[in-house]
Length: 288
Image 1 (cartoon, rainbow, N blue to C red):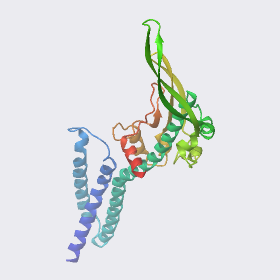
Image 2 (spheres, one colour):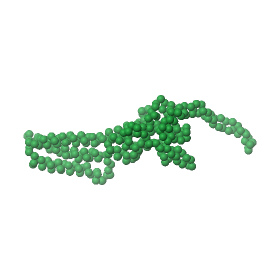
Image 3 (cartoon, rainbow, N blue to C red):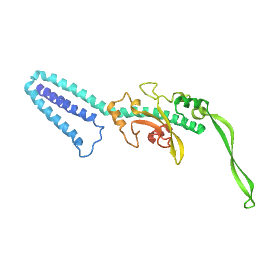
Image 4 (spheres, rainbow, N blue to C red):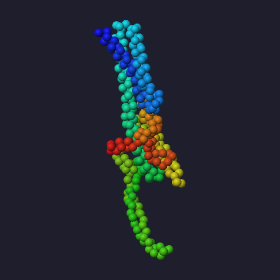
C-alpha cells in the first residue's frame, strides 16, 4: 500500500510539473491577438498534449531506471517544480493587469500636466497672439501677465444718411477695460504647480522635461500659430515590463492612448486636443 501511495504521488507531482511548464509559456503569450483558424489558436492544445505524452514517457522511464527508495525524492522535486511553475503562471497572468494599473496611474499624472501646459499656452496666445516657444518663457508669462477684465456695452444712435436723406439707427458694441487679473490667479489660484509642469512624472531622470514645439500653419490664407507638447511612453514606463511596453507603443484603440507618445496640440493643424481617451477626462472630473 505504501509503494502504491508513493507511486501515485510521484505520478501526480510529475505530470503536474510537466503540464505547468508549457502552461507558463502559454500564459506569457496570452496577451497576443491571433486570427481565428491560424496555427496560433491550435498551439495551446498541441503544447499541452505533447507535454502530457512526454511526461508519461519519462514517467515509464523513471519507473524502469530509478530505484523505488529514491522515488520519493523525485516526487518532492517535481512537487517543488509544480509550485515554482504555478507561481510563475500567476505572475505572468497578473503582469498585464498590474501593468495597466500602473500605466493608468502614470498617464493620469502626465495628462494633468499636459492640460496645465495647454491652458497656459492658450492664455499666452490670447494675450500675446502667439504661443511661448519654451517653458521658461511660459513660466515667466504666468507670473507676470494679466487678463483684462472687459465689459461689453451695446449702444445705439441715429445718423443722417446723405444718400437716402433720412435718419438711420446705428448700433455698436463698446468694450470697456475695467481692471486686470493676474494669469496666475486665473489658471492656478494659490497653487504653484506651474513651476514644475515642465517635468515629466515618473521619468527615470527627475529633470526630464516635455518636448515642446511651436510653429505656424496657413489656414484659409491666414497664418495661425500652433504648438505641440509631447513625451514618449518609454520615458514614463521605463521601469515596466519591456514586452508589455512594446505592445503599449503599438496600441491603436479609442479607449487607449494611441502610438508611442502622449501629446497635446499639433504642428500640422490648429488643434489643442490631446491623444488620450475621454476616460481620463471623466476620471479627472470625478476627482474635482
